[in-house]
Amino acid sequence: MQLTFTRVVLGWLVRKPATRMFPKVVREPFTNARGHIEIDINRCTSCTLCQKKCPTQAITVNRTEKTWSIDRYRCIQCGACVEACPKDCLVMAAAAPEPFEKKSIETFIVPKAEAAAGAVADSAK
Image 1 (cartoon, rainbow, N blue to C red):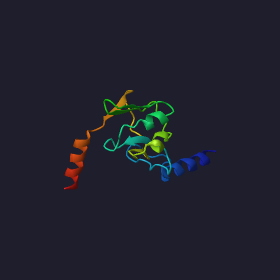
Image 2: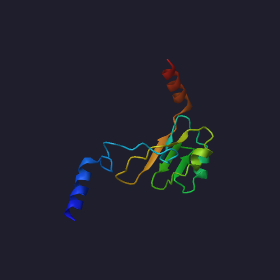
Image 3: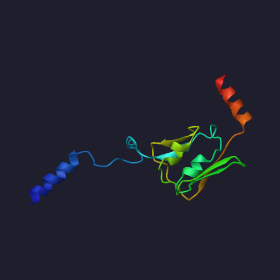
Image 4: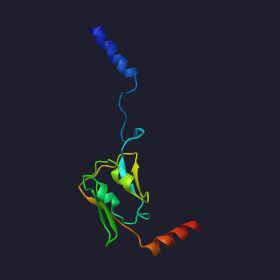
């Protein structure tokens, strides 16, 4: 009986661990894994299609204030908003989002057309 146990312990000493040393070693995301929604706010036109398609109402678009907001705790990463976006400013990132310390709503402000055009012209130089 004791010889069997010793063989098992010695086997554990020479094998690689079954787990990863997270956060030092991060596993690559699986193909087609749902991570989190990312927005390129410079391309957003505030059309509200993503808000209308979101089944959990996690996205809020305010056309008058030109803001786009997402409640990450409500979002179920279904990708309906990504498919509905006509300007392709929403993408489903493969990596899982960073953990949050407290519940909050992320708000992005759509830049004015003149400021965005100037930023594009500056980046082209």
